[in-house]
Image (cartoon, rainbow, N blue to C red; front, side, top):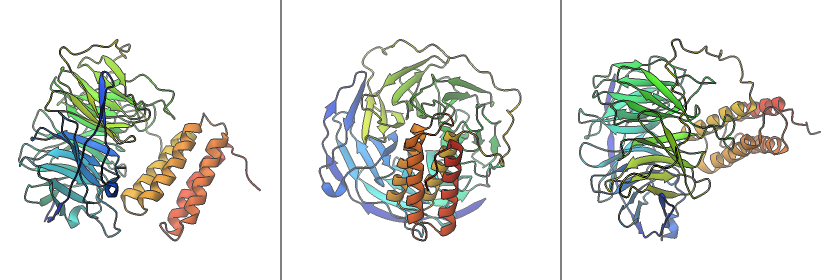
Length: 471
């Protein structure tokens, strides 16, 4: 266990902007329309939480800002001071997780290696510690011990910070993958902290004393279900989303796991996953979740009955979701730069439910693991692996945001075009453009070896697709 005191730095700046409401029954959305051109929002709103002041607070991972929305008027306030860089490479903070601290302030985790705090008046303090500089703090929650607990996505650890800024790191997770990628974290009904392991494909638990328990891997048609967000349900269990597995999962405090599959979506390659991400308990006694690729907000009852609601803005990319003080649900739309609201007026509206999926009992034995030396046979899976490599390079500060977005867009086009293992001109051209852009940055944003690794990976995909060679 490692302990250190973080250095706090205060930042104060804000932008106030009115917004116009648009009705999308039963989901209402508020478009974010900043007045100040110097603070143009292209922020990618990510996580959202209800503050003690009655407002909703959210992170902007691309805009590198914290935002606030008033539930009664839809008035948006952006705190435009760019968050400080957290590592020597100069990468911006990229705030992700957000929570209400034991002191009543809003706390957030910055992937660049910083934990931040913002008061209701907009005063920001950032805590930078050498312990977490390159660890990738991702999600954060308030523990019952009066401290804040957060995940280290790249550090492969669970850590704690006191309201005074003292950071304590616990030993690395015991089942490295080699990167488990601890993602979300929440307080369970038992008083322990429960977390997801995106790449470790597990759910974990840590006691306030730092004792970690990992539960058996999740079932998946591949080796990765991608457990993402986690929350406490009204039934006293923990509920979580599976980004790649296209499921909603439930785990009891005793560790019994049940998974509920969502209807597949053929518009979401490669495996039809709607990419369920955020999840929270609703005011109606059910769990509500977002579907980033499916562009929906979903509902699941404690018994596993699922219903889905479309978001009006196409390709909005719903991510975080939380229950507001007004009794409605609020969610972020990362791609469309909006905040959405699910309105509960009177008795809960019950739409025609999707045919309930069968309950899959916990597996008696873990599924066989594909040897790591065996490359994936599916080109779509290979493209997803390459997308993860690009995102990892950005989060570690190896490449700048604009370069990351450009590469990611080309891979996204390739992924959308891939069908089985047949060559597709769009996919082949996108992968060629990807390789050319990487080559152009060799020796600049990328070392020669880093560039060669990405180009080799793209070349392997081109070969598996059977793309025609160019003389």
